[in-house]
Length: 150
Picture (cartoon, rainbow, N blue to C red):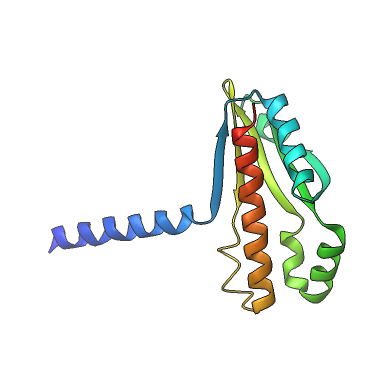
């Protein structure tokens, strides 16, 4: 009986981990942080988006004992699109604009972005589903462009 419970717990853990992995896109760039940041901003613009702001996160992390000075969140979007969607779907506003986290890890740089997998159950409108698909493809292209940049 106990063996059965252990196997069930292991299976649930695997399934939960798989579900969580669907929510994140991550790439590793061989570039140093400053060069990867430039490549990220260029890729965002080339995908047709406008940079909104770059927020430093490292100051807050230092207060918790982390020793990094290279951690940012890059916010971007298409202003007219964000305004239109924000007016039509008020509950979507906290998730806008789009964002990508970028941080140094040794001589390399990691980039992370969230998919819209976790929002789809709450926003079932077909038009939003298509918009989520577009954003996910664009974010994946941006990340891949940075990963492949020299």
